[in-house]
Image (cartoon, one colour):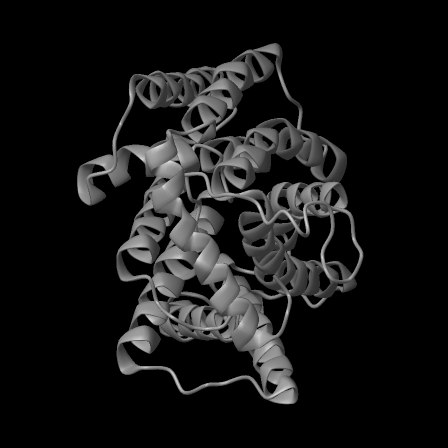
Length: 332
């Protein structure tokens, strides 16, 4: 899921609701809940299934579900070869590699700490965009970067020192974060043209197809424990996590602007810890909450108000949202 760090003017004619009449605040809350709870639900599902087989099923279920919807709605699947290849590469980076490393890491790392590390996405994206895309890294962003990385490092160091987390697991989760950031930069660099639903279907199917050989080569179907818990978690992750959260996210970028949408991520660290406690009984320490403060502040500084020039440049993303809307129906 791409995380953008520049602002765009909100659509003034629809500032508070989508075409279904759902208030914008409700969509924001729904996105934050789905995105942050997915870490705890994923760790719950890992109790009954190996990580790569679980992810392969998640991506294929999500991709096939969206494919069915696009065919029912008569969406245009006439993609240019470049766009099809771009979507596949982005899907592999943002889904297969990012979540593959996350799921392997979560076998020895708590869901709350995994959510905390993943929440640094907007911060590191800002740094890589400056290095690769030539975007301006202002003092405000630099301070936010230092705070975000420092806060995550503080929590992770205290957890490893206390024996609560595995260093190897932390490295896997951090590798997943790097892949997600790289996928975001690829999304900006390649800028594939497609409808929302078509793009989502291609990315999920590409991720599932890329991950399947590794899953079947390294894991056994006999290790899957068929439970209602696993079935419910899989449907939650596939339909809500991989489909609904993605569509809500791009809708929020369209109507609220990329900077405002990205700033919602500062809610993810505390929510991730909260869901880890509610769903899995994971215990948060005072150190965790101390570390959350600079992380949240860092995300706010990185994704906060931008210069007029940045806002003008980001206006192109809103036009992308309009194009998506015409291609797949008036979702945006």
